[in-house]
Every structure is written in structure tokens, then in C-alpha cells.
Length: 260
Ligand code: NAP
Image 1 (tube, protein in one colour):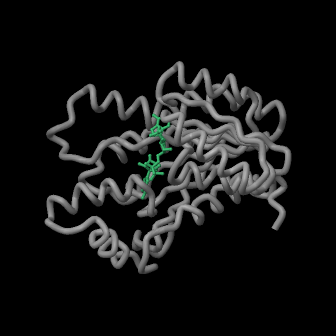
Image 2 (cartoon, helix red, strand yellow; image 1 turned 120 degrees about the vertical axis):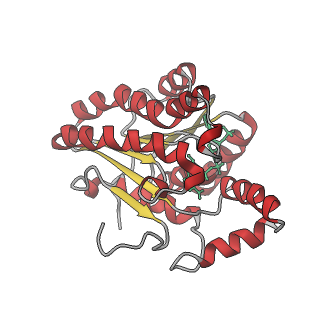
């Protein structure tokens, strides 16, 4: 299927590893010129080189913290008029509700609610004027089905989900869509790190814990980031203009419901 994206420009945030990297690869395969960001320049450059070799696409890198004003300004200076924006950043740490002080909440709000909102604000009017725009927010399955230790994550992401629910419906008439992808467990460094921390407490290995987690999904496995990237590219495709304001769960069927 031709996604109709050749020649488009994408800003893919937090994309040197994991789900952001997978989205960048899938878009680059479609002929999209991508700008990718991450804080660690070395990993970012290595990923960029890998994507260029894999796809032949134009890849621009911007090293910086996307959750800061300076980080966002640098990303937008490198890719001032993106046709596609993939909002992503590291997630807040897991823990207990009683441990999270105001500073931790503000940091989480900055990273996972306000950063995507400010990036959308910076690019959406240009997309409207050009009559094409695709914005995908990487949130979390926990927005739909809370996981107690991730309260700070789904709490602030729920705020983003609420804001874009309205905004998506204001810009859709201009062929600008805003949707979110809600990952369940995908095999990334973050899943490995979270599993290692939980495994240490349970006296198990991280691999054992990931295997156990896999068995709790109806799919019987954890997700492959490449599957996530391809779903993202589809939501960005020229023919996906009628998919508006949706929260697409990718959790191997774990959320148990008849509809929605
Ligand atoms: P990951 O494998 O740890 O990759 C995170 C990527 O984001 C890295 O490239 C990292 O590079 C970059 N990054 C992190 N913080 C950044 C910042 N402030 N500014 C710029 N770049 C930043 O994580 P992942 O599993 O792909 O997760 C991506 C998002 O999906 C997270 O918000 C996570 O909470 C959410 N999520 C993941 C899963 C899962 O199973 N994997 C499930 C639910 C939700 P640097 O460290 O060099 O900056």
C-alpha cells in the first residue's frame, strides 16, 4: 500500500531508541525526510546513520531535551514546517502515589502533557495553511486501563488526551489529524529497565518477568517496536485523513472489552 507520504517532512521526538525510533524508521521507509531528537548525541547519531543506511532517507538530528523550551526551539529550527509531528518523550518514573512531590508532578506535566501541546501549537497552523498535517502522540495503554505504579504517567497523559480530543476536531476540516497511539508492553529499553527494577524486588530475572508479562497478553507476547512504527506510519498516511481524535490501543488484546 502506498501511504502517499513521499517527500513529506516529519519531526519525530525522542527517537534514538524504542518506539520513537521505530516510528522514524517506518516513516523514512515511506520516503519521508525525518528530523529525529534525543538527549544523547552519540546514540542519536548512530540511529540516524542506521536509518540512512536502511532507507536512504534524509535524516537530520537534533540533540537536546525536548521537554525544555530550548530543546523544542532547536527541534523546530531544524524542522520548522513539518507535515508530520510524532510527540514522544521518556515517561515519568513508576512508584507509589505517596512518594511523588510537586516537583515530580511538574516535571511529568512538562514532559508528557505540556511539551506535546506546545509542539502542536507551534506547527498546527502551518499544517492547516498547507492543508495537510498528521500528528501522533505516543501515550500509553495505562491512559485507558490504569496501572497503579504508573499513576503519574497516565495522570498527565490523560490531560494531553483530553486537550487533543477537542483540538483534533477543530483542525480536521483542514486535513490535519491528531491521534494517539497507546502502547501496551513493547520490547524496548524502557520495558527492559522497568522489568529489571521490578525483577530485582521479586528476586527474578528481567527476562523471566518479561516472559511472564508476555503470557498475560491474549497475543501471548510483548509487542515488537516495528509493529508500532508501522501503525504510526499508517496513521500519518495520506488516506488516513478521516481518522480523527482516536486513541489506538496496541496492547495485544490485554484491555478486555467488547468495544472501544
Ligand atoms: P526507550 O526505549 O527508553 O526510548 C526512549 C527514547 O526517548 C530514547 O531515544 C531517549 O533518548 C529519548 N528521550 C527520552 N527522554 C527524552 C527527552 N526528554 N528529550 C528527548 N529525547 C528523550 O522508551 P520507549 O519504550 O520507546 O518509550 C517511549 C514512550 O512510550 C515513553 O513515554 C514510555 O513511557 C511510553 N510507553 C512505552 C511502553 C513500552 O512498553 N515500551 C509502554 C507504555 C508507554 P535519550 O535518553 O538519549 O534522550
